[in-house]
Length: 268
Image 1 (tube, rainbow, N blue to C red):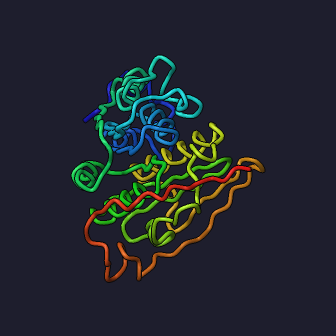
Image 2: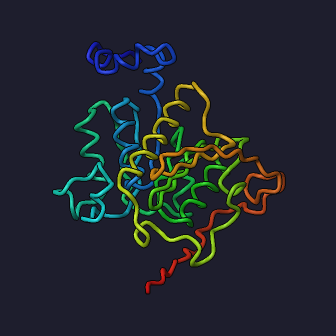
């Protein structure tokens, strides 16, 4: 595989980088990234991965574009209201970069399709907004040995880490789905739209670093930021030998979708 003259010009700012170069851009072109959730995190991640020239981008989401999405899900536009999110995202990616192959999965990510879908990709981006799916993504990636980026946002805060085989997984940090009324969702508590862009682009950067094999990934550490005071901090985490999915003697050996805990916010 070689880059065309037009592609060399398109990706010239990448090729100028010593850590990327021509060979690195070829790696990106051959890379396959799956984005689970075409929402607040998945939208900016998809835009930047497409612009970077990732050869294959898979997008899985069963939802359609809603007017409330437009405040933060920047890959969707007003005329897309009512359109499947995977279709809307694929259309924008095609406009940004026709070199990119987009595979659409207009369905929910669930225990029945998880292993089959992720097996075709090099890197997985968790752009979901509910805990059961986040735990499912983690468990599936650990079982198949896939690298993935976790991301979560709420109000003015975000958090992310990257897992590759042999490093701490999501359950090493958060062993199980939080109980009801402990953590609200964005639809219940709100989120500043730009927070999604901040975190989604970090996740896209982790995917590109992984494909290129450069830099230090966010493994064995949790990056947390608060945009109100614009403070970032990195919290060290350790792989747990007693982790129920990646530990020495795992107790979780089959995929299940755990029950979603709904938070009932009290108002005065």
